[in-house]
Length: 597
Image 1 (cartoon, helix red, strand yellow):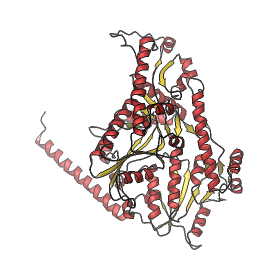
Image 2 (cartoon, one colour):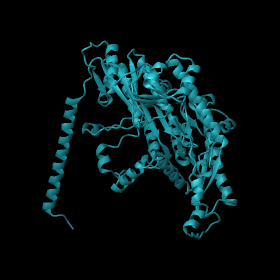
Image 3 (cartoon, helix red, strand yellow):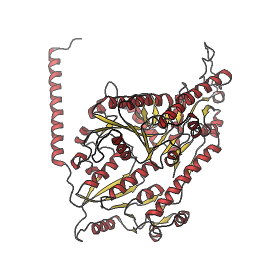
Image 4 (cartoon, helix red, strand yellow):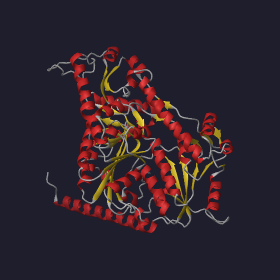
């Protein structure tokens, strides 16, 4: 039915009014920004809260910030604040408020490097913890002084790695997992097929624990002026309350936060009656990097591939958390490669792997990009299996000594539900055409020709794709790649010995190398262009043709899942991976959920 003339007028007037209101909101926000930009007092202390999830990167939307929408703090943002504070003459020092940050050991190394780099300015860095475990204390050792409150505790009592196995539960449910895998150490399916660690898994985990433990001992010994033997004895006798930690020389004092402020006042030359001038990271983020002479010059693209690898668009799923979508990353790589103003590409990988197909699509985009400009990989906490696949063809690979990487291997599988169906009284019948048409049916195992076909598929991915591409990218023989492959997980330190990475360092080191390869001046900063680009604020509210906002049902589902215990969510996450494999998708995943405390 045609709209009446009056209706059209109302619609037009309504649209104009809405546009005027929108323009007014933006104008007010811009005015508020110009009037309300934080000032940084002279000789102030930047208080950095090292806590929370700290995703590797969280795009900041300018419009959302103008409208007062809180922006999530990311690990990259945290490091940026330290870079800014180092050159900001108004900042006299930094106080790290460390409270169980959600980062792994690779990023702990990277944060320590950033703290040590800040200290080259001559400015002090103090660390304050109420309770410190291994990781928190490891980060704190990079500071000039470490403090706990008198009632605090320090749990530097060594490392433990946990592995969970679900075979017993699956047996009770009548579910038989079947997997085809390549590699002695490709143990991802073991949590479903076994009831305890295999010899390969024990060997790998013990090697990683030895590496981490040795680095922890060496770091404490160097920073707290002790012998390695003394440190080992201290670890064996931990935990300690704050006064005990002070007596043992593990911290500098057991005092309250206000007393730490007094110590900083004295260190920075304040008068006794003066109040310590502080600025929080949330406010300091409003100070543009370019106003301090940073993040300007020639452009370098930094592409973030954070999360498990999947096909399609990147997303944040309730089960899997951050997911790296091949469509998203391929577009970002192609855009950066085709932009003549961008002189180099740094791929930041923080991924345990995932879909073999999606990994290969990203590898191909990077191979094409490398023909146009330098490509350097920066590995975060983990860049394993599919995460290593997308890294292996870079001009240079940079990782931290504690980064988890390697895991060159592949597996495919399916759950066989015949016993479960019998238990619940379900009968399934298939009518097929074609010898192998029922290869993914859920009630029978692969046997005979079907099993042979799946083994052939697996071998093709590993021997025809993964191994040759690593060999080409790392300039080594396929025989050597297969020897150090086999699904074996390595720390960054071990990977460097095996030729899987080139240098130690974090994102800044990777950018430095990218500058060298692109023949950019070493003494000048570059303008970092982050990909994938943030969705515009209003698109995130109203949706678009390509993206949509979560429905109320999806929001409820996410809330329920996030309320579940972590171990339950982990189980469901791997169940979702099994669901992907029922269509024949091969997986390049870290061989186990590696959590070292």
